[in-house]
Each structure stands twice: as C-alpha cells, then as structure tokens.
Image (cartoon, rainbow over all chains, first blue to last red; front, side, top):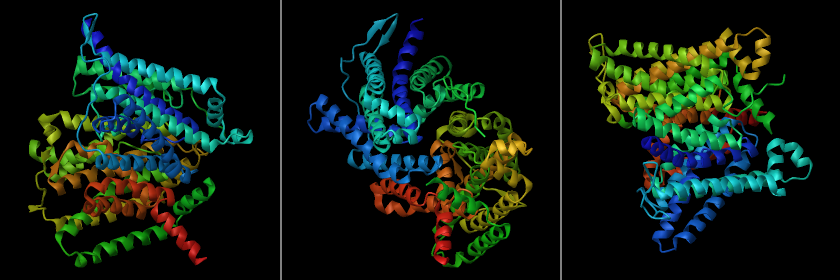
Length: 290
Length: 326
C-alpha cells in the first residue's frame, strides 16, 4: 500500500507537468490547428531562465516572474515570426516549422545558458511529508497545487472573460469569428503567449524535483503531445486527464514492472487506447462530410 | 491561400511518368560523373550517407506524398534493418546479405501486423501512434543488451558477398548510389501503377475513392509496408557502412529527420527526397564551423525553408522556373 501511494504521488507530480504541456498544445491547437512541438522548449526556458537569473543575483521570486514574462514574449514572437507568415500551409509543414523553432531555441539556450543540468531550491524545503507510509516531497504538492491553480485560472479566463470567449470563438470557427469583428490573428497570438506562460510556470515548478537542462524540451513535448492525444486532441479536460494518466502509468510501470521499460509501457498503453478509441478517451468520433 | 499551394503540390504529383524517369536518369548521370570532383574520401562518405538516407526518404515519401499518411516512427524500421545486419552475422552466423533480406522481411511482417490498426487512425492520432511505435522499438534496442549491446550499441561485421569483403568508402558510394537509383525507379513505377493511382485518389479523398471501389485500407497498408521496407534496407546499409549501430538509429530525432527530408525536399517529389536528404546530411557538416551556433543555424534554415518554400524545395523551384518561362 505504501509503495502504491509513493508511486501514485511521484506519477501524478510528473503527470501534472505533462498535463500542463498538453494543455499548452490544446490551447494552440484549438486556436490555430498547429501542433506546436516547441511547447517543451517553453518549459525549458522557464526553468533555465529562473536558474540563471537567480545565479546572477536576482531574488528567486522576481527571477521566476521575469522568466515567465520572457517565455511569454518568446511565445508571441514564435507566432509572429514563424507561424503567422506560414498561414494556410499544410499541417506537416507547420509541424516542421515548430520543430525548427524548437531546435533553434535549444541552440540559443545552449549558447546563452550552458549544457549542464541545474536545480532550484524547493519552496518548502526537502523534508519529506509522511503519508500512508509514503514519503512525499513538499515540492510535489507545490507542483500539483500550482497545476491546479493554472487549470482553474485558465478555465476562468477562457470561460468567464470576453477575451476568453473571443478565443473560443476563434477556435470554433475562424471565419465566423472574423465576421463578428474578432481579431483572430491576435487571438491566435495570445494563445501562443498563454501556452508559453503555462509551460514556463510548469518548468519552474518541476525544476527542484527533476532538474532542468537545455535538452529537456524534446522529451516533454513528446510526452505532452502523447498525453493530449490520449485525452483527445483539442479537449482541455482530456489534456489534463491524459497528462496525469500518462504520469501515473509511467510511475507504476517503473515501480512494478521495469524502470527501463517505463516509457515503453506508457506508449504501449497509448497505442492500445488509440486502437480501441481512435479519437482519444474524451474525443467524439469525427465524421467526414462528403 | 491554400489552393495555390495545393495546385503546386498537385502539379508535382501529376508530373508525367516520362518526366520522372528522366529525372532519375539525370540523378544516375550525376552520381556517375561526380566522383572525379571529390577532393577526398570524406566527400565519398558524405555522398554515400546522402544516398542511403535518400532511400529511406523516398520510401517515406511514398507514404506521405502519395497516400497522404504521416509516420513519425519510420526510424524504428531503419533500426530493424540496422540491427539485422549487426546481430545476424555476429550472433547467428548468417551472412550479411541474407541478414539484410531477413531484416527487410521482418520489417514487412511487422509493418503488416501493426499497419492495419495504426492506419485506421487519422491525422495527428496517426502521428502519435507511429511515434509511439518507433519509440517502442528504440527502447527495445536500448534494453535488450544481450542481443543489441544496449545503449552503447554494437559493432557491425563487414559484409562479405561471394567471398568479396565489402569495405572502403568508395565501394560503398557506388553501392549506395546504385541502390538509390534502383529504389527510385521502383518508386516511380509504383506511382504510375494502378496501386499508385489508387493511392493518389486516397490522398485526394478517402470517401470518394471508397465509393469508386478502392480498398482504402488495403492500399494504405501496401504502401506502409513498402515504405517500411525502404527504411529497413537503408538502415541495413547505414549500419554496415558505419560499422557500428546504436539505438539512436531508431530515435525520435531520426524519425523527425526523415520526415524533414521529405517535407523540405518536397512532398510527392522523388528528386525532392534526394535533395532533402542531401540538405539534412550536409548541413550539419557545413554548420560545424559555427561551433556552438550550429543548432541555431539548423533551426533557422529549417524554419526559413518551410516558411518561404512550403511546398518543398524541388516543387517550389520547379514552379518558380515554370513561372519564369511563362
């Protein structure tokens, strides 16, 4: 039982980060049909910028804030410089552009920062909390709480503000949204900015547990993408559930089966889910209109 | 905005069979005439890698350009071919050429088995399923160290054919060039066969082709298996040429690289696959002079080409040339 609780907590901690990455994917995908493979680089930028601003003597809370701000600007810039000029290109071309962007950002990080791994001090120290026989890091709870706050804030913003409704309208039907006077280009830009901010926060929260480095983005993008597809692409709740589920599956298979095959088990589960439900867990089957 | 690009892609797809044959003959001529201008064996080496990757890219292009299905896991099939020529001779005493064929057969079987459920998926779901499949293979190669040597990889014995030991960069250049030309011809023949026409119909509209009586699932599966075998053969060549293989051959980045070759060169253009392979093999070699700035430059080139030539290099240039003439 204590083992189970231990695996469960470490699973959903990492899963919360996957969920935030998947949420970023979902936000951008809904607004623009783009699958943004640079999403993992946002997570990396958040963590790395905080670390290096901290090393430069900036107090950590301020460093974290600046890091989120900077990453958000990168998100806006990515849309403005790389995605907007390629509007209307086919899906694979757009994916290649975001992959190019992720390689570029990784290259920048390796020059501006360095190639090492870095950590941040956890918010509430390292003394584990004992619960049901398991030792849980306080930072785990910080990650989970942080992720929950982001999800609620995002939901409130999207569902309760005029601006959020404009983003929904853009996602539902771009032409119709433009007809009622919504600047859809700006909305897509904003969804890139928000996604980047979410990624950055996730990166800062998880750094004390998993460390950060210029290369961590690739794997995170991959897992986040898988999580988003597991839940059903374009569905925010699906992204969150998919992320937590993926994290949990990984932790349980690492604990009970084999740590070497944890990624394999995770992807095997995704393949099986997709074979049974080709539209993801929460997705509705799509019918092509002739 | 969309129709203009589609038109360009379509015109590249509709190129006549004759034109395609000529293009391949031209490539063969270039491959034949190029070597005297190579200042050192290093150039042979790079050219060999270009042809080897072009084989895999051509196969993937059949799947992406003509059947309209994306695969982010094709490097997995490359890995099977690579480990076949590594494990076969060293662990089981099978000659390399037979191991290559066995690897290709195994790949075909595997692609056939997983193809049916995977190809039922559409768009991004297909992408994530193929990605997962490729990663599974990479993880297996990395962990079954009893056979594969684990993450450090293993040595690949030098192939022996009719008592003749194949080695040397120059020999490999000719083998790779010849194989590429043959596989490109095969691809062109496939494109102009009834299967190819059915595939292009599927690309345009799955429902319309089903109404016309095309067995969509079977045609997709056929081209998936063929493209997997292309990747497997390329993987065998790469491993035997390098003399060493690691699980990285099946990694996500390799798969992305293959897709990038197809998309950069031009989806649906066989010549484009070669150009894309050449670009992605040579670019990192050229960019090493930039040292730390290498990745930045690579990312910029990738973004730039895709933004300004979104139909791919070869179709975009062909269209520009046609406009210039008109």
